[in-house]
Image 1 (cartoon, rainbow, N blue to C red):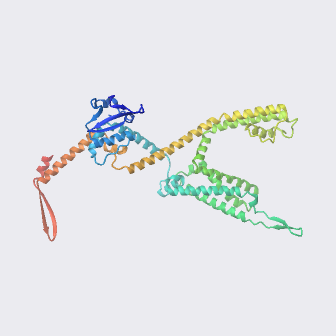
Image 2: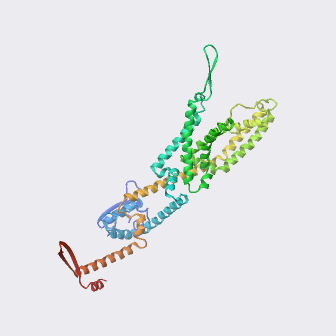
Image 3: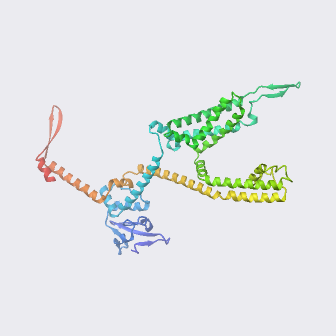
Length: 478
């Protein structure tokens, strides 16, 4: 056997010579070792077919079929039936080379994966109505169709436009909602009425964006399979917060309650969070923060304890010589927060030796307090990032399998193999061949005792077939 396995120039790669019906095939040994439970993959099983004189493995089998069988090893599991090989011969060759057990095992594994995918899809609650289901999937899954992808791009554009308007409308140079004054040549002051041109444009853009957000929210709510879960969803709550301020502002603008108007305009910043619906990166970040709530709470407690402790220490160290900066302990909270987070604005700072010692301890404690929970948060982010990458790989693999199944015709795949050979492929095929032979015998017996004549009647031709002793022939054939 050692002579049949030849070493190549690389030293590690070894070639196996296989002779099938007088045709020689060569392949690497590690290629066959991918499937050790098969005839060629097992060194012990193929040893009995070794020819020491020709230094090769000899098999008196069907040559055309072996080309596809060898490709099964080379491709890593793709078995395609040659077009010129009958199906029953090809299945016998598969049985001889012991591929059926391996393929059945792979079949079962693939079926389990498909069942898991179906279970995951089944967990996603969808509306029962076809139209409502189509609308829901279009808004929730941008990859479901080209129209859904285009709709998601349009929604993203509207979100970015609304955020841009929210920021740009605060520029003083574009604010023409207030009356302006100018000095005339004779020195008198002239008051000009407000133009409101830019203000009206911003209002129209806000109205258009809010109209789209309202339409999207209401439509998704109407077609949602679970209305309560829809209202409880965090993203949907943020969507509602980005819509309501506009309508409340329009209503309260007539009352002149400018305090409430200011609050409503600030709440409109919640539109930024609508980007998480269209960005998987932001979605992963949100999942990470949600999973790291305990660590974030611990970080907050560390900072709270440090702020109270060092603000108090700094106050008692500085209030006599530096009363303007450290007037009270609450005034020292800001200094402690800025110092512990290592920002250091410089608006407040200690000047005494004791105050500087407190500031040094405050800065070092802040670095340690922030550094402790960070590895856990990073670990959660890495977990969800890998999970997202695996999800993309599964979707790509599933899509590729469907494309390969449609592209490859006349092939015996893992899925179709169970249908062709559910239990014992070899025996079942033999049974089918026996039935075919008996059917042919029956037809020959019928045709041997048939009398065929052609007659013409009223311009129409008719073929008349008469069988002699039909019953006896059937009994003989059986």
